[in-house]
Image (tube, rainbow, N blue to C red):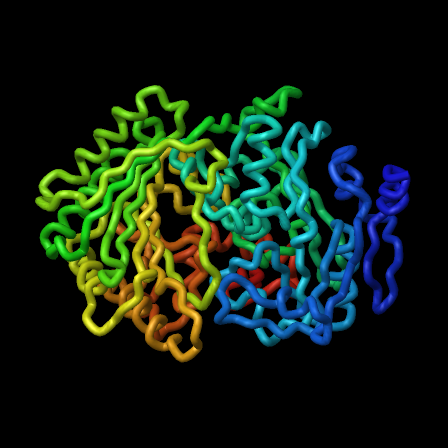
Length: 538
């Protein structure tokens, strides 16, 4: 009965003509029909529409960043790609604007803008399974990273090099590129993306479902390419991703993605801010940057290590560095010891703590569980380590008098390695020459009365660090632009970006023009848009 229901539902696509829903014999039903046998159940519900008078409403319109509170007329919870297509078609036919949310972790108001009256919530579309027909792992956009890691690890002992926060939804995380602890070793998540299923809207307002693969002969290959770093909310609604590493083949799922380590080894060092003067801080940060300049070439033995610098505000009491790798790295202890020796050289201040540990791969200690609240965040990639002037600016802002917030910080994560083995045009992720990724955050607070203080601090911090390039990390000898999954509308604001370099170049480098052409083909009406969305080519 379950398979019969699926076949009846998927014998043809459905499109909107005016207010009527009619079958379209010219649109192939490949999208849902190719779903793996047993890969998902018949839709358990839906689509379910929740309005403002419903007790469920408040929890469905509040995202991770609580500065933004949406007020859509309806939140549509969906249980299948066909339901997504139907909802999109109906909203477009009625002249409405739609936005899509998977995990709700967007750093800006892209799913909570006042103009959005229809929000599609993908949280119930969260299956993770193996698709024997495509020889790939199928992941629906409502799944969070924790579910993906757990299912892939327990079922087949494999992993994707995704983010460190297990409650992040994959719908947006994958589309923007996806990186994490294993990326220096295995590349970005999108380097393992085989196919994507997307509900798009053509120039006539017709909603249809398209499957696009990385196969060279696929007529929709450009749509696949756009989802390898083009960002979420730009081209349509992703209803399924398929993952298989390039060059992987065969029928054994355990050989189609990187093998997961059994456990993660790490070493953590921290220093008391009270013991740190500017010279010691500068030497520590310079050591960190220098190590990644020397050890981020693709193929280097040290790309198997991940590392991070957590420059917390002085009010936190301490700052720290991390290093780690999987237990399947044969010389892990020696590599990590060499990393630590390089970090502490010449600092002149003994660490307050130096802790080594190993924990099973799925253990909570390996992941970051972020608190929800109000926040403002910014990102920057680096092709080289910070200049002396930038390091001085970082110290100045992290020790700034009159500002207190223990959760405010600059986090630097190791980048490069295998990520940079991919050509800039091979995927939509053009930044394939950076070695570090920075994350500037004002941390978390809860009262709207504190917005101006915290947002002002991180804005001034960021502008100070990049003062030589117009207050932003405009691509150049040192700066490498920014990561679209850390969206920051200030980059499109001439009050904060005085570089003369548009936000589109900062995020997409030389790939923006191609993304614009793809946008025109698959979303010419700009049904899917936000403050940093790709504009169609004219």
